[in-house]
Image (cartoon, rainbow, N blue to C red; front, side, top):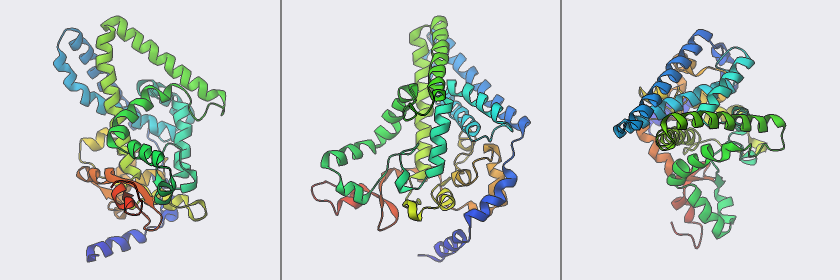
Length: 349
């Protein structure tokens, strides 16, 4: 370990998440004017780009589909605003947050109330090995993987493959799974209402677009934009929690504050990616103090320099965590299948 590593470790160790959480309360205040401005400069350009693509493609100018990545980035930012609404962070009141979130959920193909509940459970249990399965990327420990049947290990390997995680998975999640309140079917009528009302609103919008531009044009524009946003969102979520020194513990040793700060990364993106991702890369702060509006997270880093290098990744470093697949109880870090397979007979590295 280098002197720089030691210095950074000492700096990190000095951060007490409980004290820090109290200190961050001063940032947990939404500014309505700023919030409406952020909403306007996100939704209006998104709708304008999609409209331009629809008119252009209908007229035979398929080059307009080159705008799909840009529209996908704007849709990703819409999801981040919806995400802030779910935490009660975007507007001062609950009613304003919830109805804004519900409206945006139609654009993101996400039933807001269902997502809000599952995401709250994710925040409440992140890093807890005994409470996995709520809004998480499925993660096994090394011992669990070793004890699993061969077929189960192969399925887990398939699930953790990037093509599934960031391609097939997001498509399934946003096109199919979100159409029903999966996991919440017996938790109350509100979740059925949320899912069905969102579905009806989506059908109405897509039906109107199909009537005006044709089913083929509508599908050719809307579907790729949604899938780009979904894949980028899942990639961001993955890097925010699946990194080598992520924090995991069983219930007896688990602490919400420790897991929030040390179990979430700081994905330090350059502009304009930081803008399009709504500063969600400052995820360690977000998990510790989720009521801070996304547009105030840079203020937190400016006022607390020690947080900048904690679990920090750059865009170029996001490929490294994609190889990680299992939590090692002995080493207390995420490891690769190759590392784990050294102790498993009959499984190829």
